[in-house]
Length: 124
Image 1 (cartoon, rainbow, N blue to C red):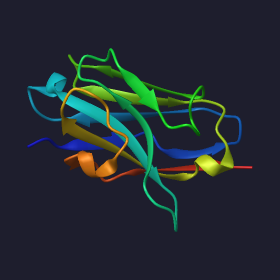
Image 2: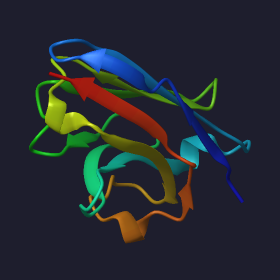
Image 3: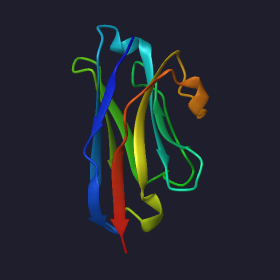
């Protein structure tokens, strides 16, 4: 069983930056692929970014590619999402998720463990 807890959301103006953090429990953190998803009101949950257990493989949703960066530190059981050049359409609840596996998946149903979410609001 893995528990994940996100933090770092808030209100930011368009063009600004935020860094979300996620801490996971367990001594085998490196065995888990980690992902970030987001969900805006009335919309489906959307893949944002994923990172392999070693950190060597990352992938991003098309809407955030080039603006967001995912990273992890297995010694600290942590993963981060650095968000730059934020836009109003990035407003959503952001979720950290974990799955056993090797490759980051873009499919939210592939992830077994989820945090409670953190709100990100980007004002225009």
